Length: 100
Image 1: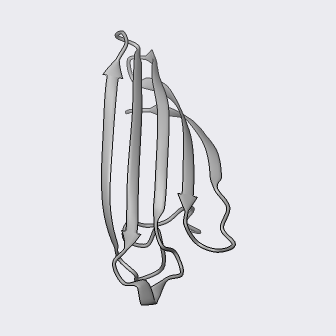
Image 2: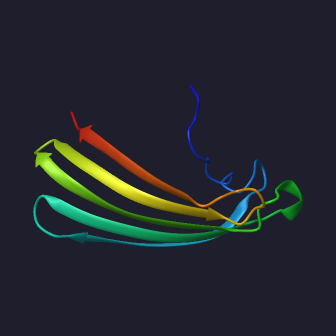
């Protein structure tokens, strides 16, 4: 199984560790809809292990309860890692989640 995306403490380089801060909020609009947003900033703990200087991560999403045990979720995420040759990334994630 190939992992997609960074693991915790490897977001800016393998085995580099990170020092980070994250803020987030969630707001329930009604019984079926919840909005959320977050912002995070990270720097590598060990500069010798990575070429990245820092990273800024923004995300906003919505969750809609389709049925009692089913929800549809969508999220847009922006990633800006300060490293030469690395461009900013804008991603859209969607999913249908069923709880049993």
